[in-house]
Image (cartoon, rainbow, N blue to C red; front, top):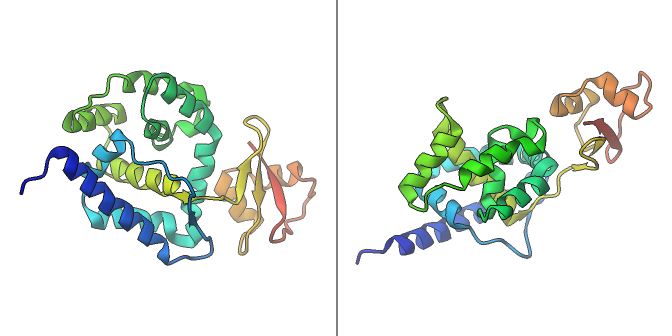
Length: 226
């Protein structure tokens, strides 16, 4: 019996959610629990899921975010939190699906003032509802540089990991213009933290009144200059 396009999409996403949920059965140092309320995949995510059907590639990206106590997932989530409210409002204002708010992150707009992503959302307004054309529209937004396939898999995996699980990163954005608060976990050094946020050790020391000391303790909170 042949399935309709809608049935294929639904079946594919049931399988996808099962795989994503089971992936977290082997936890490392960070415990991620399912959210009590999970946002269902929106229409764009369903198209991305069909376009990223290679389970081996999906597994590679999931492992990338899972390794080292989900360090990479936390780092990306910190960057997303910086602009999530602004981008979420931009998507809602244009009647775009919630997943649209993640696209600027994967196009490195978190390294710019959040409002600079407005041009992206204006382009997304014209995205096609047709699956094939939607991917073409997204590719045009991505640009002519290489790596679109990896970008698409990365986008699909990251969105579902964040939407399905209660991620509680070790850092919290306290102010867009002031600082980030970082809670130290086991194994970290002042050097590794400076590399994580791309902020010099001296700036971290100055922000926390540490003088020349590099001594830090698990559970301690550090102010990271933004």
